[in-house]
Image 1 (cartoon, helix red, strand yellow):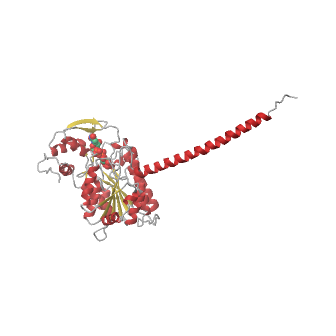
Image 2 (spheres, protein in one colour):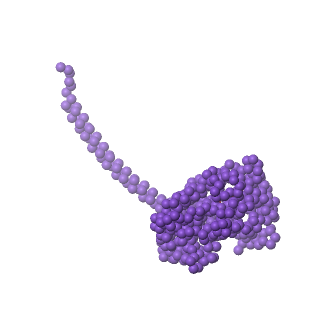
Image 3 (cartoon, helix red, strand yellow):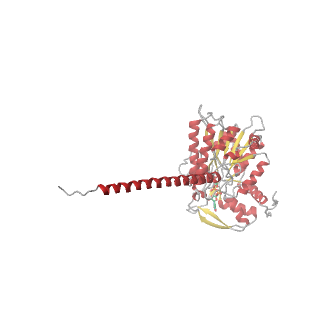
Length: 441
Ligand SMILES: O=C(O)[C@H]1O[C@H](OP(=O)(O)OP(=O)(O)OC[C@H]2O[C@@H](n3ccc(=O)[nH]c3=O)[C@H](O)[C@@H]2O)[C@H](O)[C@@H](O)[C@H]1O
Protein backbone atom coordinates (compact mmCIF):
# COMPACT_ATOMS: atom_id res chain seq x y z
CA UNK A 1 0.00 0.00 0.00
CA UNK A 2 1.38 3.36 -0.90
CA UNK A 3 2.15 5.87 1.87
CA UNK A 4 -0.67 8.36 2.32
CA UNK A 5 -0.24 11.24 4.86
CA UNK A 6 -3.12 12.26 7.12
CA UNK A 7 -4.29 15.59 5.62
CA UNK A 8 -7.57 16.04 7.50
CA UNK A 9 -6.18 18.70 9.94
CA UNK A 10 -4.19 20.69 7.41
CA UNK A 11 -7.17 20.65 5.04
CA UNK A 12 -9.42 22.18 7.72
CA UNK A 13 -6.86 24.89 8.44
CA UNK A 14 -6.50 25.62 4.74
CA UNK A 15 -10.26 25.75 4.27
CA UNK A 16 -10.52 28.17 7.20
CA UNK A 17 -7.73 30.36 5.81
CA UNK A 18 -9.31 30.30 2.41
CA UNK A 19 -12.67 31.31 3.95
CA UNK A 20 -10.99 34.21 5.79
CA UNK A 21 -9.28 35.28 2.51
CA UNK A 22 -12.64 35.18 0.68
CA UNK A 23 -14.32 37.25 3.38
CA UNK A 24 -11.48 39.78 3.29
CA UNK A 25 -11.55 39.92 -0.51
CA UNK A 26 -15.32 40.46 -0.51
CA UNK A 27 -14.95 43.23 2.08
CA UNK A 28 -12.14 44.73 0.07
CA UNK A 29 -14.18 44.52 -3.14
CA UNK A 30 -17.17 46.12 -1.45
CA UNK A 31 -15.00 48.89 -0.10
CA UNK A 32 -13.24 49.46 -3.40
CA UNK A 33 -16.48 49.48 -5.37
CA UNK A 34 -17.77 52.16 -2.99
CA UNK A 35 -14.63 54.17 -3.61
CA UNK A 36 -14.90 53.48 -7.36
CA UNK A 37 -18.57 54.51 -7.40
CA UNK A 38 -17.82 57.74 -5.58
CA UNK A 39 -14.85 58.49 -7.83
CA UNK A 40 -16.92 57.82 -10.97
CA UNK A 41 -19.67 60.07 -9.66
CA UNK A 42 -17.18 62.81 -8.96
CA UNK A 43 -15.50 62.51 -12.35
CA UNK A 44 -18.91 62.52 -14.10
CA UNK A 45 -19.94 65.67 -12.26
CA UNK A 46 -16.64 67.34 -13.14
CA UNK A 47 -16.98 66.27 -16.80
CA UNK A 48 -20.58 67.44 -17.09
CA UNK A 49 -19.59 70.74 -15.54
CA UNK A 50 -16.58 71.08 -17.86
CA UNK A 51 -18.53 70.39 -21.06
CA UNK A 52 -21.40 72.60 -19.98
CA UNK A 53 -19.05 75.52 -19.54
CA UNK A 54 -16.54 74.90 -22.29
CA UNK A 55 -18.02 72.84 -25.07
CA UNK A 56 -18.15 74.56 -28.39
CA UNK A 57 -18.24 72.64 -31.65
CA UNK A 58 -15.62 74.87 -33.23
CA UNK A 59 -13.26 74.88 -30.29
CA UNK A 60 -9.75 73.94 -31.24
CA UNK A 61 -6.27 75.01 -30.42
CA UNK A 62 -5.99 77.90 -32.80
CA UNK A 63 -9.48 79.14 -33.56
CA UNK A 64 -11.82 80.04 -30.80
CA UNK A 65 -15.27 81.42 -30.60
CA UNK A 66 -15.98 83.76 -27.72
CA UNK A 67 -19.54 82.55 -27.56
CA UNK A 68 -19.46 79.50 -25.32
CA UNK A 69 -22.96 79.30 -23.89
CA UNK A 70 -25.41 76.48 -24.44
CA UNK A 71 -27.76 76.89 -27.36
CA UNK A 72 -30.66 77.06 -24.90
CA UNK A 73 -29.20 80.37 -23.79
CA UNK A 74 -29.56 81.97 -27.22
CA UNK A 75 -32.92 80.43 -27.89
CA UNK A 76 -34.65 81.54 -24.78
CA UNK A 77 -36.52 84.66 -24.02
CA UNK A 78 -39.27 86.61 -25.67
CA UNK A 79 -36.97 89.56 -26.42
CA UNK A 80 -34.56 87.32 -28.33
CA UNK A 81 -37.39 85.75 -30.35
CA UNK A 82 -38.76 89.19 -31.12
CA UNK A 83 -35.38 90.27 -32.53
CA UNK A 84 -35.19 87.09 -34.61
CA UNK A 85 -38.68 87.65 -36.04
CA UNK A 86 -38.21 91.36 -36.61
CA UNK A 87 -34.91 90.93 -38.46
CA UNK A 88 -36.16 88.12 -40.69
CA UNK A 89 -39.50 89.65 -41.69
CA UNK A 90 -39.56 90.99 -45.27
CA UNK A 91 -40.70 94.58 -45.84
CA UNK A 92 -41.67 94.25 -49.50
CA UNK A 93 -44.50 92.28 -51.09
CA UNK A 94 -43.38 88.68 -51.75
CA UNK A 95 -40.03 89.50 -50.14
CA UNK A 96 -37.69 86.73 -49.05
CA UNK A 97 -36.91 85.72 -45.55
CA UNK A 98 -33.23 84.79 -45.68
CA UNK A 99 -30.99 83.14 -43.14
CA UNK A 100 -27.47 84.38 -43.92
CA UNK A 101 -24.80 82.21 -42.33
CA UNK A 102 -21.43 83.91 -41.88
CA UNK A 103 -23.26 87.25 -41.76
CA UNK A 104 -20.40 88.97 -39.91
CA UNK A 105 -18.00 87.77 -42.59
CA UNK A 106 -16.89 89.79 -45.60
CA UNK A 107 -19.31 88.53 -48.27
CA UNK A 108 -22.02 87.85 -45.68
CA UNK A 109 -22.07 91.44 -44.49
CA UNK A 110 -22.35 92.89 -47.99
CA UNK A 111 -25.07 90.44 -49.06
CA UNK A 112 -27.08 90.95 -45.87
CA UNK A 113 -27.08 94.70 -46.42
CA UNK A 114 -28.07 94.40 -50.08
CA UNK A 115 -30.94 92.04 -49.26
CA UNK A 116 -32.19 94.23 -46.42
CA UNK A 117 -31.99 97.37 -48.54
CA UNK A 118 -34.28 95.91 -51.17
CA UNK A 119 -36.84 94.86 -48.54
CA UNK A 120 -36.01 91.25 -47.78
CA UNK A 121 -35.92 89.95 -44.23
CA UNK A 122 -32.43 88.92 -43.11
CA UNK A 123 -31.38 86.99 -40.07
CA UNK A 124 -27.64 86.52 -39.60
CA UNK A 125 -25.78 83.66 -37.98
CA UNK A 126 -22.10 83.83 -37.08
CA UNK A 127 -19.79 82.26 -34.51
CA UNK A 128 -17.37 85.23 -34.45
CA UNK A 129 -14.36 82.92 -34.37
CA UNK A 130 -10.81 84.21 -34.09
CA UNK A 131 -9.44 83.04 -37.47
CA UNK A 132 -8.92 86.74 -38.15
CA UNK A 133 -9.39 89.85 -36.05
CA UNK A 134 -12.86 89.47 -34.48
CA UNK A 135 -13.07 93.22 -33.87
CA UNK A 136 -13.55 93.64 -37.64
CA UNK A 137 -16.44 91.17 -37.46
CA UNK A 138 -17.89 93.12 -34.53
CA UNK A 139 -17.61 96.35 -36.51
CA UNK A 140 -19.48 94.74 -39.40
CA UNK A 141 -22.10 93.49 -36.94
CA UNK A 142 -22.50 97.00 -35.56
CA UNK A 143 -22.94 98.37 -39.05
CA UNK A 144 -25.58 95.73 -39.84
CA UNK A 145 -27.45 96.42 -36.62
CA UNK A 146 -27.94 100.04 -37.71
CA UNK A 147 -29.89 98.50 -40.61
CA UNK A 148 -31.92 96.38 -38.21
CA UNK A 149 -30.13 93.16 -39.11
CA UNK A 150 -29.73 90.89 -36.12
CA UNK A 151 -26.96 88.31 -35.96
CA UNK A 152 -27.48 85.24 -33.81
CA UNK A 153 -24.16 84.24 -32.28
CA UNK A 154 -23.88 80.51 -32.75
CA UNK A 155 -22.04 77.84 -34.63
CA UNK A 156 -23.32 75.97 -37.67
CA UNK A 157 -22.88 72.73 -35.76
CA UNK A 158 -25.38 73.79 -33.11
CA UNK A 159 -28.33 71.70 -34.32
CA UNK A 160 -30.56 72.63 -31.41
CA UNK A 161 -30.22 76.33 -32.08
CA UNK A 162 -30.64 75.96 -35.84
CA UNK A 163 -33.86 73.97 -35.48
CA UNK A 164 -35.15 76.54 -33.05
CA UNK A 165 -34.56 79.27 -35.65
CA UNK A 166 -36.46 77.26 -38.25
CA UNK A 167 -39.28 76.73 -35.74
CA UNK A 168 -39.57 80.47 -35.26
CA UNK A 169 -39.09 81.64 -38.86
CA UNK A 170 -40.42 80.12 -42.11
CA UNK A 171 -37.25 80.98 -44.04
CA UNK A 172 -37.73 81.04 -47.81
CA UNK A 173 -33.97 81.00 -48.47
CA UNK A 174 -30.64 80.27 -46.86
CA UNK A 175 -27.55 82.10 -48.09
CA UNK A 176 -24.86 79.87 -46.66
CA UNK A 177 -21.54 81.74 -46.53
CA UNK A 178 -20.14 80.58 -43.19
CA UNK A 179 -16.97 78.60 -43.77
CA UNK A 180 -13.38 78.14 -42.80
CA UNK A 181 -11.73 80.19 -45.54
CA UNK A 182 -8.10 80.48 -46.64
CA UNK A 183 -6.18 78.13 -48.88
CA UNK A 184 -2.81 78.07 -47.11
CA UNK A 185 -4.12 77.97 -43.51
CA UNK A 186 -5.50 74.48 -44.17
CA UNK A 187 -2.02 73.06 -43.57
CA UNK A 188 -1.91 74.60 -40.10
CA UNK A 189 -5.38 73.73 -38.93
CA UNK A 190 -6.95 71.04 -41.10
CA UNK A 191 -9.65 70.09 -38.59
CA UNK A 192 -11.25 73.53 -38.67
CA UNK A 193 -12.03 72.97 -42.38
CA UNK A 194 -13.72 69.66 -41.65
CA UNK A 195 -15.73 71.15 -38.78
CA UNK A 196 -17.04 74.15 -40.70
CA UNK A 197 -17.07 73.23 -44.35
CA UNK A 198 -18.18 69.62 -44.03
CA UNK A 199 -19.72 68.90 -40.60
CA UNK A 200 -21.27 72.37 -40.35
CA UNK A 201 -22.66 72.20 -43.88
CA UNK A 202 -24.16 68.75 -43.30
CA UNK A 203 -25.71 69.96 -40.05
CA UNK A 204 -27.32 72.87 -41.88
CA UNK A 205 -28.61 70.56 -44.62
CA UNK A 206 -30.03 68.15 -42.04
CA UNK A 207 -31.98 70.97 -40.43
CA UNK A 208 -33.15 72.49 -43.72
CA UNK A 209 -34.18 69.14 -45.17
CA UNK A 210 -36.45 68.61 -42.17
CA UNK A 211 -37.83 72.17 -42.18
CA UNK A 212 -41.35 72.78 -43.36
CA UNK A 213 -41.31 74.73 -45.64
CA UNK A 214 -37.88 73.70 -46.93
CA UNK A 215 -35.93 76.79 -47.95
CA UNK A 216 -33.91 77.12 -51.17
CA UNK A 217 -30.19 77.20 -50.48
CA UNK A 218 -27.49 79.26 -52.19
CA UNK A 219 -24.02 78.58 -50.83
CA UNK A 220 -20.39 79.53 -51.34
CA UNK A 221 -18.16 77.05 -53.10
CA UNK A 222 -14.81 78.23 -54.43
CA UNK A 223 -12.68 78.72 -57.53
CA UNK A 224 -10.13 76.54 -55.75
CA UNK A 225 -12.12 73.41 -56.70
CA UNK A 226 -10.50 73.70 -60.15
CA UNK A 227 -7.21 72.86 -58.46
CA UNK A 228 -4.68 71.69 -60.99
CA UNK A 229 -7.12 72.11 -63.90
CA UNK A 230 -5.25 73.30 -66.99
CA UNK A 231 -8.25 74.40 -69.10
CA UNK A 232 -8.39 78.16 -69.50
CA UNK A 233 -10.74 79.86 -68.67
CA UNK A 234 -12.30 77.59 -66.06
CA UNK A 235 -15.81 76.39 -66.95
CA UNK A 236 -18.23 74.61 -64.67
CA UNK A 237 -17.96 71.48 -66.83
CA UNK A 238 -14.15 71.26 -66.36
CA UNK A 239 -12.74 68.59 -64.08
CA UNK A 240 -12.65 69.39 -60.38
CA UNK A 241 -11.25 66.17 -59.03
CA UNK A 242 -7.70 67.39 -58.42
CA UNK A 243 -7.92 69.78 -55.45
CA UNK A 244 -4.56 71.29 -54.49
CA UNK A 245 -5.49 72.11 -50.88
CA UNK A 246 -7.66 70.69 -48.13
CA UNK A 247 -9.73 73.87 -48.35
CA UNK A 248 -10.46 73.08 -52.01
CA UNK A 249 -11.17 69.45 -51.15
CA UNK A 250 -13.75 70.45 -48.50
CA UNK A 251 -15.46 72.82 -50.94
CA UNK A 252 -15.53 70.10 -53.58
CA UNK A 253 -16.90 67.70 -50.97
CA UNK A 254 -19.59 70.31 -50.28
CA UNK A 255 -20.62 70.20 -53.93
CA UNK A 256 -20.99 66.41 -53.78
CA UNK A 257 -22.86 66.59 -50.47
CA UNK A 258 -25.21 69.16 -52.05
CA UNK A 259 -25.90 66.65 -54.82
CA UNK A 260 -26.89 64.01 -52.25
CA UNK A 261 -29.29 66.25 -50.32
CA UNK A 262 -30.84 67.46 -53.55
CA UNK A 263 -31.25 63.90 -54.76
CA UNK A 264 -32.70 62.40 -51.60
CA UNK A 265 -34.62 65.25 -50.02
CA UNK A 266 -35.52 67.60 -52.87
CA UNK A 267 -33.54 70.55 -51.51
CA UNK A 268 -32.99 73.27 -54.10
CA UNK A 269 -29.23 73.94 -53.99
CA UNK A 270 -27.06 76.43 -55.85
CA UNK A 271 -23.28 76.48 -55.32
CA UNK A 272 -21.34 79.60 -56.30
CA UNK A 273 -17.64 79.29 -57.08
CA UNK A 274 -16.25 82.63 -55.92
CA UNK A 275 -12.97 83.82 -57.48
CA UNK A 276 -10.69 85.68 -54.99
CA UNK A 277 -13.21 88.26 -53.75
CA UNK A 278 -11.85 91.60 -52.53
CA UNK A 279 -13.12 95.02 -51.47
CA UNK A 280 -14.07 97.24 -48.51
CA UNK A 281 -14.68 95.36 -45.24
CA UNK A 282 -12.57 92.53 -46.68
CA UNK A 283 -10.64 89.71 -45.03
CA UNK A 284 -7.31 90.59 -43.37
CA UNK A 285 -5.91 87.13 -44.20
CA UNK A 286 -6.03 87.84 -47.94
CA UNK A 287 -2.99 89.07 -49.84
CA UNK A 288 -4.38 92.42 -51.09
CA UNK A 289 -5.37 93.27 -47.50
CA UNK A 290 -2.12 92.40 -45.72
CA UNK A 291 -0.04 93.80 -48.60
CA UNK A 292 -1.78 97.14 -47.97
CA UNK A 293 -1.01 96.93 -44.26
CA UNK A 294 2.62 95.94 -44.86
CA UNK A 295 3.18 98.56 -47.56
CA UNK A 296 1.93 101.28 -45.23
CA UNK A 297 4.30 100.04 -42.51
CA UNK A 298 7.23 99.83 -44.96
CA UNK A 299 7.49 96.08 -44.41
CA UNK A 300 8.72 93.69 -47.10
CA UNK A 301 6.17 91.52 -48.91
CA UNK A 302 6.53 88.12 -50.56
CA UNK A 303 5.36 87.92 -54.13
CA UNK A 304 4.96 84.35 -55.29
CA UNK A 305 6.01 83.03 -58.67
CA UNK A 306 5.39 79.53 -59.98
CA UNK A 307 7.89 76.66 -59.70
CA UNK A 308 8.88 77.35 -63.32
CA UNK A 309 9.37 81.06 -62.57
CA UNK A 310 6.16 82.34 -64.14
CA UNK A 311 3.95 85.04 -62.65
CA UNK A 312 1.08 83.94 -60.40
CA UNK A 313 -2.29 85.42 -61.35
CA UNK A 314 -5.81 85.60 -59.96
CA UNK A 315 -9.20 86.50 -61.36
CA UNK A 316 -9.71 89.07 -58.56
CA UNK A 317 -13.45 89.81 -58.26
CA UNK A 318 -14.89 92.92 -56.67
CA UNK A 319 -17.36 92.44 -53.85
CA UNK A 320 -20.24 94.39 -55.48
CA UNK A 321 -20.11 92.06 -58.48
CA UNK A 322 -20.20 89.04 -56.17
CA UNK A 323 -23.19 90.49 -54.29
CA UNK A 324 -25.07 90.92 -57.58
CA UNK A 325 -24.26 87.29 -58.40
CA UNK A 326 -25.50 86.07 -55.01
CA UNK A 327 -28.77 88.00 -55.33
CA UNK A 328 -29.20 86.79 -58.90
CA UNK A 329 -28.78 83.21 -57.73
CA UNK A 330 -31.29 83.72 -54.90
CA UNK A 331 -33.79 85.36 -57.27
CA UNK A 332 -33.66 82.48 -59.74
CA UNK A 333 -33.55 79.69 -57.15
CA UNK A 334 -36.58 77.45 -57.50
CA UNK A 335 -38.43 76.18 -54.46
CA UNK A 336 -37.29 73.01 -52.75
CA UNK A 337 -39.67 70.17 -53.49
CA UNK A 338 -39.69 68.31 -50.21
CA UNK A 339 -41.37 69.03 -46.94
CA UNK A 340 -40.55 67.73 -43.52
CA UNK A 341 -37.73 65.62 -44.98
CA UNK A 342 -39.78 63.92 -47.74
CA UNK A 343 -38.99 64.60 -51.38
CA UNK A 344 -42.03 65.19 -53.60
CA UNK A 345 -40.24 65.66 -56.92
CA UNK A 346 -36.97 66.61 -58.62
CA UNK A 347 -35.41 69.85 -57.39
CA UNK A 348 -33.00 72.38 -58.81
CA UNK A 349 -29.25 71.71 -58.44
CA UNK A 350 -26.86 74.34 -59.84
CA UNK A 351 -23.20 75.37 -59.82
CA UNK A 352 -21.91 78.71 -61.17
CA UNK A 353 -18.60 80.50 -61.49
CA UNK A 354 -18.66 84.04 -60.13
CA UNK A 355 -15.41 85.62 -61.28
CA UNK A 356 -14.18 88.72 -63.05
CA UNK A 357 -13.10 87.02 -66.33
CA UNK A 358 -9.85 88.98 -66.34
CA UNK A 359 -6.87 87.53 -64.42
CA UNK A 360 -4.25 89.94 -63.07
CA UNK A 361 -0.78 88.98 -61.84
CA UNK A 362 0.12 89.47 -58.19
CA UNK A 363 2.95 91.76 -59.36
CA UNK A 364 0.41 94.01 -61.05
CA UNK A 365 -1.81 93.97 -57.96
CA UNK A 366 1.17 95.22 -55.93
CA UNK A 367 1.99 97.98 -58.40
CA UNK A 368 -1.63 99.21 -58.30
CA UNK A 369 -1.42 99.32 -54.49
CA UNK A 370 1.93 101.13 -54.65
CA UNK A 371 0.42 103.84 -56.75
CA UNK A 372 -2.79 104.11 -54.68
CA UNK A 373 -0.85 104.28 -51.42
CA UNK A 374 1.95 106.36 -52.88
CA UNK A 375 4.65 104.03 -51.51
CA UNK A 376 7.41 101.84 -52.95
CA UNK A 377 7.08 98.17 -52.03
CA UNK A 378 9.99 96.13 -50.68
CA UNK A 379 9.37 93.05 -52.77
CA UNK A 380 10.71 89.57 -52.24
CA UNK A 381 9.85 87.52 -55.28
CA UNK A 382 9.97 83.91 -54.17
CA UNK A 383 8.79 80.55 -55.47
CA UNK A 384 5.32 79.70 -54.25
CA UNK A 385 5.64 77.48 -51.16
CA UNK A 386 4.04 74.08 -51.72
CA UNK A 387 1.07 74.84 -49.56
CA UNK A 388 -2.01 74.38 -51.67
CA UNK A 389 -1.77 77.47 -53.83
CA UNK A 390 -2.54 77.25 -57.55
CA UNK A 391 -0.68 79.26 -60.23
CA UNK A 392 -3.66 81.04 -61.77
CA UNK A 393 -7.44 81.28 -61.89
CA UNK A 394 -9.67 82.55 -64.67
CA UNK A 395 -13.46 82.31 -64.71
CA UNK A 396 -15.77 81.69 -67.61
CA UNK A 397 -19.03 83.19 -66.32
CA UNK A 398 -21.29 82.62 -69.32
CA UNK A 399 -23.51 80.21 -67.39
CA UNK A 400 -24.24 82.79 -64.66
CA UNK A 401 -24.71 85.45 -67.34
CA UNK A 402 -27.25 83.33 -69.21
CA UNK A 403 -29.19 82.28 -66.13
CA UNK A 404 -29.29 85.51 -64.11
CA UNK A 405 -27.48 88.20 -66.06
CA UNK A 406 -24.25 88.09 -64.02
CA UNK A 407 -21.80 90.56 -65.55
CA UNK A 408 -18.83 91.82 -63.54
CA UNK A 409 -18.19 95.52 -64.07
CA UNK A 410 -15.35 96.49 -61.70
CA UNK A 411 -11.74 96.26 -62.80
CA UNK A 412 -8.99 95.68 -60.25
CA UNK A 413 -7.73 99.30 -60.18
CA UNK A 414 -11.21 100.69 -59.55
CA UNK A 415 -11.98 98.07 -56.92
CA UNK A 416 -8.69 98.52 -55.11
CA UNK A 417 -9.16 102.28 -55.04
CA UNK A 418 -12.45 101.74 -53.19
CA UNK A 419 -10.79 99.23 -50.88
CA UNK A 420 -7.90 101.58 -50.05
CA UNK A 421 -10.32 104.42 -49.35
CA UNK A 422 -12.21 102.21 -46.91
CA UNK A 423 -9.00 100.85 -45.36
CA UNK A 424 -7.58 104.29 -44.61
CA UNK A 425 -10.85 105.47 -43.21
CA UNK A 426 -11.53 102.35 -41.12
CA UNK A 427 -8.07 102.29 -39.56
CA UNK A 428 -7.92 106.07 -39.21
CA UNK A 429 -4.77 106.40 -41.31
CA UNK A 430 -3.77 109.77 -42.65
CA UNK A 431 -4.22 109.51 -46.39
CA UNK A 432 -1.33 109.93 -48.77
CA UNK A 433 -3.70 109.49 -51.69
CA UNK A 434 -4.92 112.65 -53.35
CA UNK A 435 -8.60 113.28 -52.72
CA UNK A 436 -9.04 110.39 -50.23
CA UNK A 437 -10.32 111.01 -46.75
CA UNK A 438 -8.24 109.29 -44.10
CA UNK A 439 -10.40 109.85 -41.06
CA UNK A 440 -12.30 107.07 -39.39
CA UNK A 441 -16.05 107.59 -39.45
O1 LIG B 1 -11.02 82.00 -54.97
C1 LIG B 1 -11.10 81.35 -53.96
O2 LIG B 1 -11.89 80.45 -53.82
C2 LIG B 1 -10.15 81.60 -52.83
O3 LIG B 1 -9.73 82.96 -52.95
C3 LIG B 1 -8.81 83.36 -51.98
O4 LIG B 1 -7.61 82.58 -52.09
P1 LIG B 1 -6.42 83.14 -52.95
O5 LIG B 1 -6.83 83.32 -54.37
O6 LIG B 1 -5.27 82.26 -52.69
O7 LIG B 1 -6.25 84.61 -52.34
P2 LIG B 1 -5.07 85.27 -51.50
O8 LIG B 1 -4.71 84.43 -50.35
O9 LIG B 1 -5.47 86.66 -51.26
O10 LIG B 1 -3.85 85.25 -52.54
C4 LIG B 1 -3.94 86.01 -53.74
C5 LIG B 1 -2.70 85.80 -54.56
O11 LIG B 1 -1.58 86.31 -53.85
C6 LIG B 1 -0.56 85.34 -53.81
N1 LIG B 1 0.21 85.56 -52.56
C7 LIG B 1 -0.35 85.31 -51.38
C8 LIG B 1 0.34 85.54 -50.21
C9 LIG B 1 1.64 86.05 -50.28
O12 LIG B 1 2.33 86.28 -49.26
N2 LIG B 1 2.17 86.31 -51.50
C10 LIG B 1 1.50 86.08 -52.66
O13 LIG B 1 2.02 86.32 -53.75
C11 LIG B 1 -1.25 84.00 -53.90
O14 LIG B 1 -0.38 83.03 -54.46
C12 LIG B 1 -2.40 84.34 -54.82
O15 LIG B 1 -2.00 84.20 -56.15
C13 LIG B 1 -9.40 83.20 -50.60
O16 LIG B 1 -8.45 83.54 -49.62
C14 LIG B 1 -9.89 81.80 -50.37
O17 LIG B 1 -10.55 81.75 -49.13
C15 LIG B 1 -10.80 81.35 -51.48
O18 LIG B 1 -12.03 81.97 -51.36
